[in-house]
Image 1 (tube, rainbow, N blue to C red):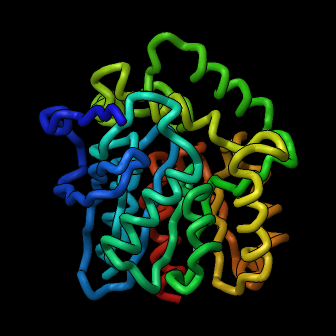
Image 2: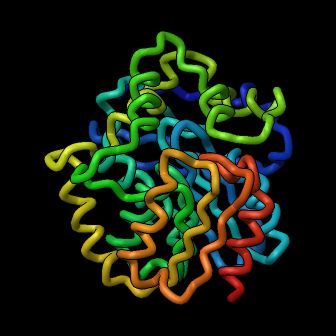
Length: 301
């Protein structure tokens, strides 16, 4: 497997992101290993929050959330998915699959870090991966925060705006990562913040994961990931783990998923699911402190 590793120098100018990365090795299908990066912050003995980002961002997205959680005594573990951030980046799109993304994340958080009694915080692909982990390893989790995300099986069509996004990613000659993240926000983005989202991808070949991601979302009933996601839904539909759904008010991509999750997951019942106002798809960027307070209150409760 041919892999790109972003030079450390690319990450020297990151606003409001002082945490040093740690690294672990996970297996690749060819018998080798991939280096996966993650950030740990907060007291070692505090309750654990696993913060999973999505497409095309990286752990930098959670910087405001992490500050609030650590000030509340919560230990944060924030990985960079394979293909993103400081993690290794296979340079061929065929090297990415939904199953591999789940397995690489599982290997990091369970085999390497041995996380237990975890609060999942998953947005976008962080939910697609995280909800699978919850369904397949429910004994490792104590609660779930699913925000601007879902768990598609391909049995229902994706919204038109998502198809437009997918076609744009597939067809564009130069993939502008910072622009994609900024377009998923409703509040203005500073130039240095946009540059931080571009930082992991100084070369076009480093963006294979970002290009592959939309095509890995199940969009038909016989998609390679559909059966595993249906199996996950069977578990989640009987799961009593507390599940909070703080969706934003400005996400046309996942907004329709909130009532579906609320209807199908028993752990959502009896909870007040706050709406994060004046926030888009990347609500961690638009309203990270508010989301952090919501998550902290949920964990403390």
